[in-house]
Image (cartoon, rainbow, N blue to C red):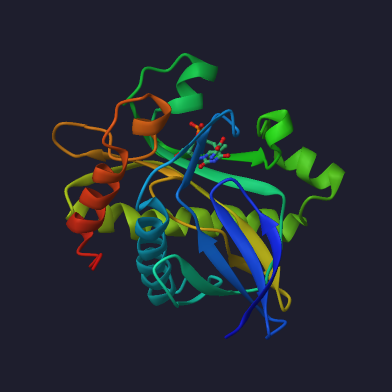
Length: 237
Ligand code: TMP
Ligand code: ASP
C-alpha cells in the first residue's frame, strides 16, 4: 500500500490517499488538542499508543459483528482503513455523568446513568460541536432517518461490547464518541476509538485514565493511556 497525497489533516490525525481508491491511510500524530483546538500540545508516544489502541478496539468490535473501516495497522503511527463518506455528526453514549452533561444539566459527576444517555453533536469546531437532535439532522439532511436509527443502535451495541472489555481491566467506560460513514450502501463505524475520545476511570479509585488528564492539566496523560493499554493486554512493543 503506497501512501500518496494528504486528503485531510485533523487535530490529532492526518488522512492520506493511497494507490487504492477505496483505501486511506490514517496517521496518528502526537498532537493533543482540547476545547475545540484551543489547547494543543505534542505528547511523545501518543500517536503510537492511539494507533495500537484503535487497532485493538476496532478488531474487537469487528469480531463482535460491528462493521468498521479498520483494515490493518501498517506502522507505529499508521493504519489502513476503508474510505468512507463521513457523516458530520458525532454520537455520544454516557454510562456515568461527566463533562458537558454535568455542565449543561447540573448533574453531579459520577452519577450512574440508567439507561445510558445517547446524544448527537454536530461536528463543527467553529461552533464548538453543538448538541443537535434528530429533527435537526432530518431538516438539514446530515443523515437519513434510517442512518439515524442505525447510528443509535450501533453506538449502543458498541457500549455492550466495550463496557465488558474495560470492566475486565478494572475500568469504567464513562462515555465515548463515535463517528460513522457511508460505504457501499452501508453505514460503517469510522474515525477512531482511543482514550482521546472516551472517558475511562479506574473502577475502584475512579482515577481518570483518559484525555481529561490533558483537559484538566492533571499530568501523566500518556502514562495513563499506556496503563489502559496494559490493562487490556495491548502489546505496545
Ligand atoms: P463531552 O462531555 O465533552 O460532551 O464529551 C463526551 C465524550 O465524547 C467524551 O468522552 C469526549 C468525547 N468527545 C470527543 O472526543 N470529541 C468531541 O468533539 C465531543 C463532542 C465529544
Ligand atoms: N477533541 C476535541 C478538541 O480537540 C474535543 C475535546 O476533546 O475536548 O477540541
